[in-house]
Image (tube, rainbow, N blue to C red; front, side, top):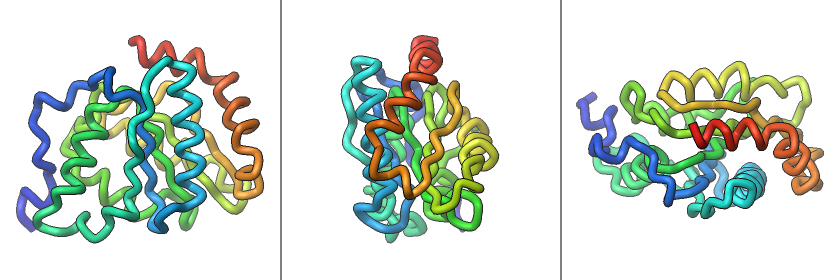
Length: 187
């Protein structure tokens, strides 16, 4: 494996977040147009509204999956740049085998050490079973922190049964964590 297959071609100048980039949903579900995407976009929109920031177009990794392991990956490299320069990112995944998806891990593995330094990240997990509620805290948060992201709030853990009441669930999460998130963005 060559170095270019592991390290994205992201210039160092883009590693600092650009507040004009706003709130970016990133979806690690291997199925395009998933319910995970709907949840990520709902949470990102609510955060953008709360912070008075623009909502950036969603990165749906299902659309980029064929490029993740390719030697030339312009779409993936663009997504890596967009994520590293966002103000806030909602990193969303369904729970597979009690953790995040391999697609999300493979995408995030393309960053070098501290590749997300300066980014405020909000983990979001969607599972079929409430027993997986801690997957965002136990598995996804450490990965994001290892990459240098700040994760000032608890993850939002949704069960499939809550997807019909997204506005209510997202609103309750934001009522509880919005001030901490805003303080993390200001810091």
